[in-house]
Amino acid sequence: MRYHFQSEQWLPYPVEHVFRFFSDPANLPRLMPDWQKARIDKATLTPAPAHPSNIPGTPVAGKGSRILLSFHPVPFAPIRLKWDAEIDEFAWNDHFCDLQLTGPFAYWHHCHHVSAETRDNIVGTLLRDDLHYEVPLGPLGVFANWLAVSGQIRSAFAFRHRRTAELLQEISA
Image (cartoon, rainbow, N blue to C red; front, top):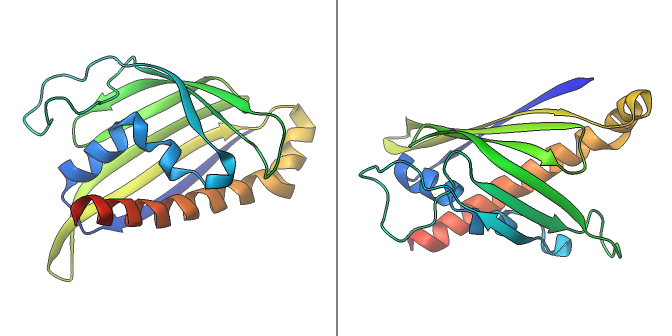
């Protein structure tokens, strides 16, 4: 069974700044809890189309880029899970999407959308995450999603929102 999860976060930074941050694969492990010890084991980047907001020399994962990430699934786990994903959609300062090729889910497609939004007279960015996923193991996966997976996804994105705000503040300072 496929599930849909959506979250939004407003950030007081320009769209170009937020999009560049998320399209740099080096930032992905930084958006995961330290206990996961996430790392990029391999990245094959396909250059994004030329665009005025791109800073030369800044890594950008354009359409066709592949990222192999590994991480601990639970604290103190002796194993590392591998997650191989490909960027299957990319539109500068609008959105990009990653599709899991192999990993812990039966299906995972995650789109990061950015749009300009003004709040309290501050021009910023609305970041919207749209996630479609499926837990493996058929009926057991449905139970696992109800019992734990959907809550873990909500927690992971809540952590990611806090961490994004911290990291963008550091970069912008």
